[in-house]
Structures are given as C-alpha cells and as structure tokens.
Length: 328
Image (cartoon, helix red, strand yellow):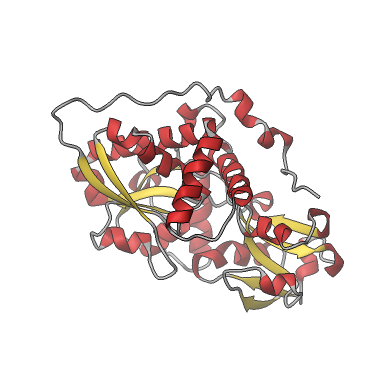
C-alpha cells in the first residue's frame, strides 16, 4: 500500500503557489568581491536541506554576493558550537537548542514552521490515545529531542517506561518498545518502508497537541548580526529564494540531492528523499501561507510557546525578549 499524505491540501499546495515560473537570479554586480561564508547544517545531505543546496547550486547565493560553503555534520558535530567557535558563520538549528545555550544568538530566518517530531505506536499495541501510553515502553531521543515528549507526558499525566532510542527504528519494528520517537519526514517513512503499513500505525504529532515547536532556522552570533547586518539580510533572502526554487522545481532538486547523497555515501533512495522533501515543504508554509513573501518569520506565539516550556522544565530561568532573539 502507498503512503498517503495526511492532508490533501498539503499534497497539492504547490499547484497554488505559482512557483514554477521562478527564474534564476541575475549575477552579482561585476567587480564586487563576494563574502566567503560557511553554513553548517545539522546532518548529512538530505531533503531537509534542499533549499540551501539549491541556493548554492543555482547561483542564488552568488547573486547576493555570497560565496557560501555548506558543511554537513555527523553525530559528533554541533552546528551551534561551530558558529560560536568561529569555524562557521551561520548554522541551522532548532529554537529549543539555541535558547538553552544562554548565549547571544540571533535567528535571521525561521525556515520550518511546523514540528515534525512525533511518537508512533502500532494499532496492535492498543495504544490509540495519549493516555494509553501510561506504563508502556516509550523510546525517546535525549537532549533537545526529549523536551516535547516530556511536555506531552506531563500534559496528559502519563508515566511511561522511558528507554533511550537509537538512530534507527529497529527496536520498534521488532516490538522491543511500544512507542518510538520519529521525525515525520524521516523515521516515520522508514517504518513504512520496513514493511509496516500506515493503517497499522498510530501517529501522535506534538503539533496536534498544542506543542508545536518550530524546527530548523538559520542562526548566527549577535556579534555577526550587529557587525555584518547586510550579509545577514543577503543570507536570509538567498535562503528563502533557495527554498522557493526547491518548491517549484522538485524533480531537479531531487536530482541535485541524490548527487550530494552519492558523493557523501549517504544510504538512501529517491523515493525516501521525495517523501522528505514533500513533508519539509509542508513545514515551510505551515501557518505562514504559500506566498514566499511570508516565509522565514519566527512567529511570536511560537517563540513564546517554546521559551515558556523550556522555563517550565528548568532548561532556562528567564524567557528572553523576542526582539533580542529574532530578526527579519
């Protein structure tokens, strides 16, 4: 059976976006030396980073006068650490990660507006609603990935048996845990590809339970923003144009992605990357609409929701001012 998107509107949103006509950018003015920058993303090449890769490959960064090197990360690399220690100028990160650092960081572009983090159970487990997880074995990732599950359990007064989760879904597939953590654009599809049909799964999207924590945004240090504001504005424009291009040219984007994956020996296939790209693009437009002019804004309500939950769980002591954290 084929995987179906949760929303018909999400499956067809590109038809109404008018993006297919987007052209390539004009070249930067002759004689100007481009600013050489490093953008550190959170993982190896995959559709999660499609907009940044297309901004580079289609000359969008160059048209803004930026020479951007995109660096990938493994499990031992923290993009935020790379920025703070001067090895990168910009990075992608989650709001929850940046707020808990208690360091002067600025969000210049909020790319993903919707959380893709979720919990997944099998229908055969009898877990059909949140309260059914009480006393059951739930696998969760550590660190920032544990913040939403913790808030979810508290909200429904659930006391599960928590076990650490690895980077794959093997334990869930063989029944070693009742519930597993997943990213909708990644592990959820891998569960299906492992042979478990969608009708056999019960998804719990944190965004459906008042716990939407927007994920990937582009960050730099406050010093970078204050000393190089023009570069930050150019970076923001180019990133959003890159995502606009990726949305309007998905097959071409997948061609580029698969070349990157082959170069970095990433084990994947086009079907999985296509699923990921579709879901990630849904997260780009969530709550801000299909018009690219509205993309990239960190909404105040989302910022406050994340910050207040971090304070409630003791990760931060004070909710910072929105104006100190986000720039447009």
